Image 1 (cartoon, rainbow, N blue to C red):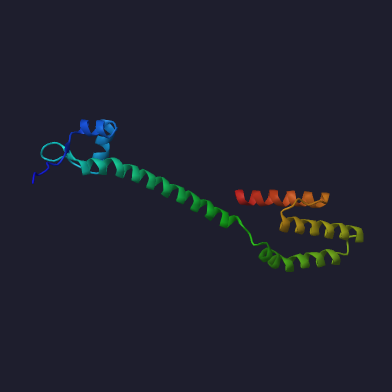
Image 2 (image 1 turned 90 degrees about the vertical axis):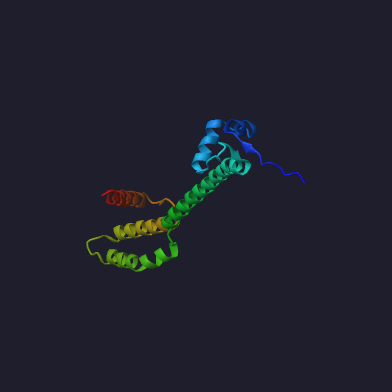
Length: 155
């Protein structure tokens, strides 16, 4: 039986055969720490590893980058969401205390108390439903509260 001599590639011949620039192939070989044999040539396996492992590595890097980006988006989304029911439960007692305080304020007229309670209810509804308050006084109060919140966060 006749023995088959393995194919050996020069850099230029492999680059021509695999339709890749010699500089690109050389870079891929160096990046993979692939060195030519004593004859100064490369085996087919070495050439294939240099060319196709690079493409695989690039695809893998892209997929990892996309996964990292999505993970960051998810993390950001989780931290920005609020459980409305839990928030309502936490704020129910303070809200009732504020209502009682308004009702017990002896210097306020009944009409002023009613206005304040309506504004407070409108703010409460807006906070829980993310809707703009419909009462003018509540709108001003909400805008003022948002400005104060933004100012506090900037410091």
